Each structure stands twice: as C-alpha cells, then as structure tokens.
Amino acid sequence: MESPQIRPGLVTSSETKLRVLAFFPNAAQGNLLIQILTAIGVKNDRLGVTPPERIEGGQGMLLSIGCVDEEELGKVERLCRSQGAELHRQRRR
Image (cartoon, rainbow, N blue to C red; front, side, top):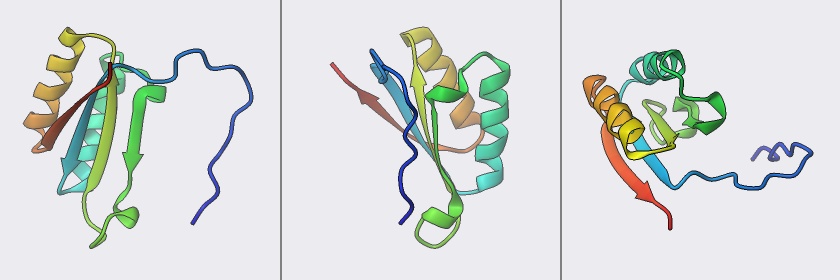
C-alpha cells in the first residue's frame, strides 16, 4: 500500500457537502468525463479518482465529484449518466 501524500498548509473546509459517486465500467468513459468536468469549471481538487488497477478485476473507474450547490450537482449527474455511469449521492451535514 502506498503512503498518503500530505501537503502542508491549513485547510479550513476540505469537504463539500454534496458529492456524486460514479462508477464507470469502462475507464475511458471516466477519463472523458474528467475532461468534460474540468472544461465546465469543476475544480480538479474536488475530483477523486480510483483507477482500474485499484479496482477488483482491473476494469472500470470510480469517480468522487464534489459539488458546490444543487445546480452543479444536477449538471454533474446528467453528464455522468450520459457517459454510462452508475450513480450514488453522498450528502454530509
């Protein structure tokens, strides 16, 4: 297991309250979605990626996408579904 990377500096609020978890059976679809999300303005630091080599069976990709509001959440969910993802929402209070 790899050691986690630790970046110096104070983080006041590292987690967003709205998060979409999307599983892509094909990693190419996940890679395309990452490019689309960054193009529409989703910041890279709100994207979490589990690559195929870390998934049992060695196929697919899991994305964790933090959203700032309900509008962005809906847009991200529509994009994920259009690329064939299985979606799960995570809400923190």
